Amino acid sequence: MEKLTRRGSLTRLGSFLAVAAGGGALLDETTSGNAAIASGAVQCVLTPELTEGPYYIANEKLRRDIRDGHPGTPLGLRLTVLNAATCKPIKGAAVDIWHADAAGNYSGFGEGAASRTFMRGVQKTDAKGLATFTTVYPGWYQGRAVHIHVKVHVAGNVVHTGQFFFPDSVTQQAYKVAPYKARGNPDLTNAQDSIFVNGGKRSMLAVRKNDQGYVASIAMGVHK
Image (cartoon, rainbow, N blue to C red; front, side):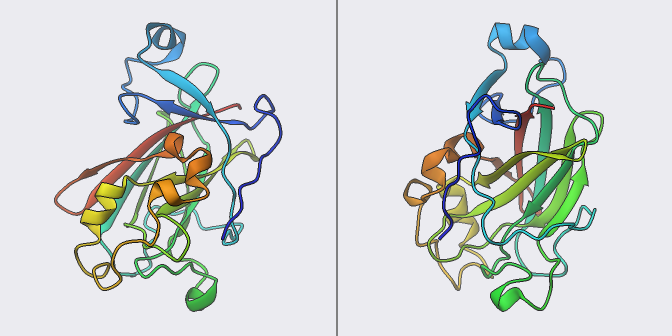
C-alpha cells in the first residue's frame, strides 16, 4: 500500500493548492484573479501533497488519448492549472497523469508489464491553463480507492505531485457495466483510503455523465 509523504512545510515552493469554484468545477473565464478571491467567487485552499506512489514512469509520451486500445467506459479529463498567487491560468504547464486500467493494472508493472504506455500521458496547458485527456474510468486494485496520479511541471520543475479521486456514488454507477461489473466495487471507499484521508477531499474530481461516458474536471493552483 502506498504511504503518505510530506514534502516540506506548507509554505515551501511547490506546495499544492486546490482551487475550488462551484464545488470543484472549472473556473469561469470572468471570475479570476484577486477580485474573484476577495468576492469569494474563487477560494484557494492550501492542501498537502499526496504520494507519487510506486507506479510512476518518467518521460511519458506527449499525447491526449492514453487508452492504447484498452477497454473501459470513456472518461474525458479537463485539468486546469492556475497561478496560486493570482488564480490566473498558467500556459505551457506539463500535466503528467497515470492510472490503472479497468482491470486494475498499471502499465509497466505486474500484469501490465508488457506495455509501458497504457493509461499514461502528458499534455501541456493551453492559454486558459487547460489540459485535456481521453482515457477510461479507472479500475481499482486491492487496498486503494479509485484514483488518478498527477504531476505538474512548470518551467521544467515539478510543482505538484498528487492524486485525484472520484465520488463513491459515481464509481458505484460506473462499475455496473462491463468490464467493471465482473470485478465489482472497490474493497475500500474514499473514507477508508489511507491517502484520501490525508487531503483527498481537496483533490476530488467534479464528474458528470455524458452520452459517451464521463467527464471529470478539477482546477489546480501552483506556485510558479
